Length: 135
Image 1 (cartoon, one colour):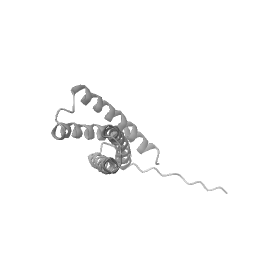
Image 2 (image 1 turned 135 degrees about the vertical axis):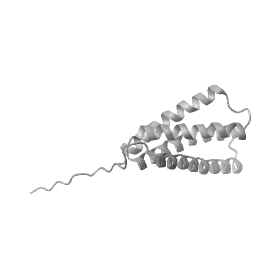
Image 3 (image 1 turned 120 degrees about the horizontal axis):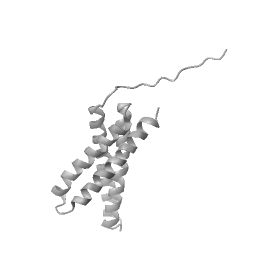
Image 4 (image 1 turned 180 degrees about the horizontal axis):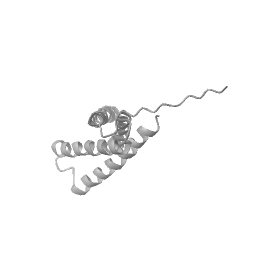
């Protein structure tokens, strides 16, 4: 006699979960700040240029966004692309508000639109991965 066990999929809610959004945004900033600290230490102790550090910060920011969107969407358990998209947009919007305060003149309208689009896409992809890859 062969015994089959059904794999149980737990879906925590049918709709959008603000708590998952908040957790994802906090995770994105936590990972980004940790990466920024490490990169600052590398720049301070080695001969890595600030230009290279800037590119590395941008890349690690996108990576942290993808991971955090996956994390937030995984917490939600459903609607991965929606949760990821929302996490990406909120993360980028907060950084767009902070950038002129910390670095005056460092942001253009075209750059802001590009960051919003990239954040939305990266967030949505991270959200899809977070919900679907770890079932």
